[in-house]
Amino acid sequence: MYIVVFRNVSGSISNGVITWNRFENKKQFDNWWLNCKNVKNWYEIVEEGVTEQRAIELSSSLESRLAGLQGASRALSELEDPLQIISDSTAH
Image (cartoon, rainbow, N blue to C red; front, side, top):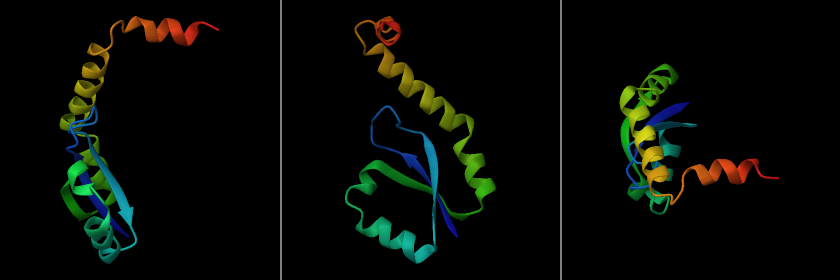
């Protein structure tokens, strides 16, 4: 197993969020990284060849969590009426 940790650099609401993925081996990862269309526009490599424990540590870091909160906050601020989501989801 070969674990790679990524940071989202897409500019979307997930920008800055750190995530990770398992690959069978480095060769499988290299093939995916080189051949997957636009992957480099969405992610940058933080660390590769790490343990699952290290991947979890990085993805649950304060930096990653703050990026997620900032993205969610930005998405909510762009809504015309953020409370409309709540009332729409409860109205049946």
